[in-house]
Image 1 (cartoon, rainbow, N blue to C red):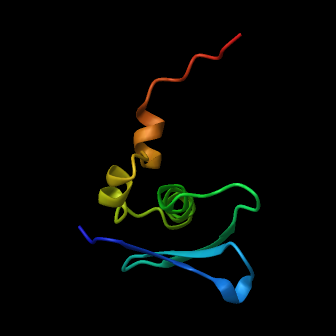
Image 2 (cartoon, one colour):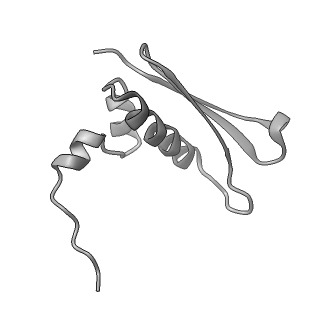
Length: 88
């Protein structure tokens, strides 16, 4: 199985507080630009956003190790999970 890489950097060329996060695998590259405004985004938050964009767009399993590292299930794992109970 192929592996994906994840890189992140500040993106001051877009303005203060902007970040660029890239998920790259042999099938495609997903680039996400984030600006949390007054909220502070952690590196983990930024990685999760990029992984959440890449998985449904590409449908490959290359991000499996990254998702496990950042605590984010794949689409197939979410589909296999029992439905959540709603709070009342």
